[in-house]
Amino acid sequence: MNTKKLVLKKSKFDGLLIGTKSDGTKYSVRTDRRRYFFPDEWIEFISQFKNKEHKFFFITLLHTGARIMEALNLKYEDINTERNSINFKIVKQRKAKKNFYAIGKSRGFFVSNNYIKEYKSFIRNKKINNNEYIFLDNSKLPQNYDSLDNNEKKQYYTSKTISYSNMLKRKLKKTTIKDWYNFSPHNIRKTYGMWMRTFNIEMAELCYRLGHDMDTFMAHYGSSLIFTDSEKRKIFKIMGDVK
Image 1: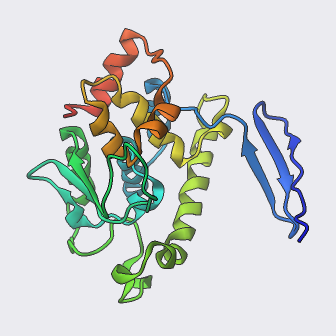
Image 2: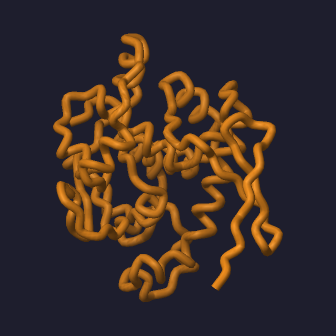
């Protein structure tokens, strides 16, 4: 069976290739997916948000390093304000690998006081049902949603994934970040991985929090840290008391 090869062409943006699928859908491919936020860039980006839910979603990505599907499937009960912890019950299913530190069907760890403060601000004056999802429209989910596997769940949150991805691009266009096109929600996960390296946390713990094996972690986050002392101080201020 012959498979038609997709042709990519250079775009007007450096490092961004564009193409068209057989059905006419246009798409883009970044040649370098390692971009992450520097603290001043993050401050400028997050200041664009007025909607509390949208803002808290991106703050959740930054403070937890979650994949977008993991964050979208968070329930209110998954954030523990007494223990300062978060628990991702819906995680990416990985095949067995050597040196894998995130084996299991869930992933729970501590978050900072700064994140808990943001969460408390987000839910203030809201009537909370702990069993409901924070970022999904609960009224549109089937009653058996919790029992569905990841692939079956996907149809119910894909529109949110697209919406938040487009939202990130729109907000970045309004900032002074010139290569805004190099960012996607996944680059906030990259940011978490790089920023967390400025804290005294064991490598195995970082792998667990990100749901990575050691080899994958080193491939994506093994580059030298180029943050200045001033930038490190800003990272500490944004993230808070990470432990």
